Amino acid sequence: EVQLVESGGDLVQPGGSLKLSCAASGFTFSNHGMNWVRQAHGKGLEWVSYISATSGTTYYADAVKGRFTVSKDNAKNSLYLQMNSLGAEDTAVYYCARDGSSYYGMDVWGRGTTVTVSS
Amino acid sequence: EVVLTQSPGTLSLSPGERATLSCRASQRSSSSYLVWYQQKPGQAPRLLIYGASIRATGIPDRFSGSGSGTDFTLTISGLEPEDFAVYYCQQYGSSPFAFGGGTKVEIK
Image (cartoon, rainbow over all chains, first blue to last red):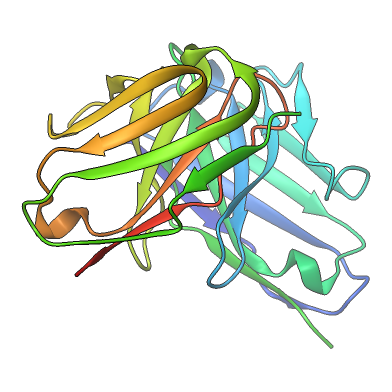
């Protein structure tokens, strides 16, 4: 079964750091780019970051550029998001999502992990 | 940077009715890059349509996508109870891969 499972979400103080993980299974992870997408409570989807299949290309939303770093370990079938200088505006459910390798779109999603930034 | 505007914000319809959802891009975008997702409460989004009009695996044929340039449409030909949800469009061609604000399809 193709599956993505996020972890690492937590309550963190403003200005703090957190690292999210996404464990992939059931498919050849090294063949796919990956994304992070977040959703604040009661709000819409916000794309956060993309990394290509072999980590050669990364993109970030302006809201997180310079604070977040996406990485991918194909040997461990894992995706990561290092988040620094967190603020209340980063409070959200964070989803990892697989890039469809033969078309444009995110075809597999995890269930999400919750990040709360509060003092 | 492409900005996507979805309308209406909420669509109130009865089961069996036809739903027409709009997604307008701030600049011309290849239809190859236009994607639609469905999200139900408490669940992750699900890929519905890619390439503006191609149904993803397992998506019923009552869902159809169309459009080109700056105007794209998602149509649900006859609403089933499980179709009441929020729908998002996204452009996936160039960073940032922005989503539209979403259209909620609710039961009238």
